Length: 115
Image (cartoon, rainbow, N blue to C red):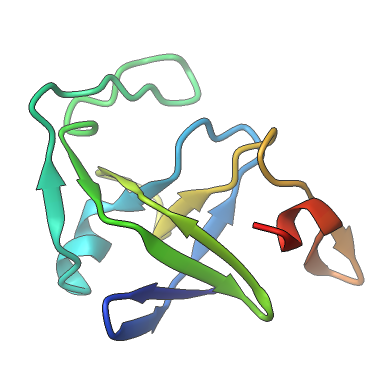
């Protein structure tokens, strides 16, 4: 997928997680791509899949950025989080986007195309 931020665009690895409740960006990726971060006055609690608080997450977020998959675009602000997995983004809330598998590729449904 391609992440557009400011005048830059970078190819990123995104985990399309239908159980994800907030879009997250790996803090190492944000630093590497020199994405400006904003600090929250009050840290938000971010929990992992085991409902355990992720200690270093929730204090920073990005401005709106565009995530592109072929001709499909999604404009989001990402919360910054440390991630052990070798992914750049954790994205796609189940109720907001719907994806289906076809011939080994992710195809966005009609609802996602309108975003």
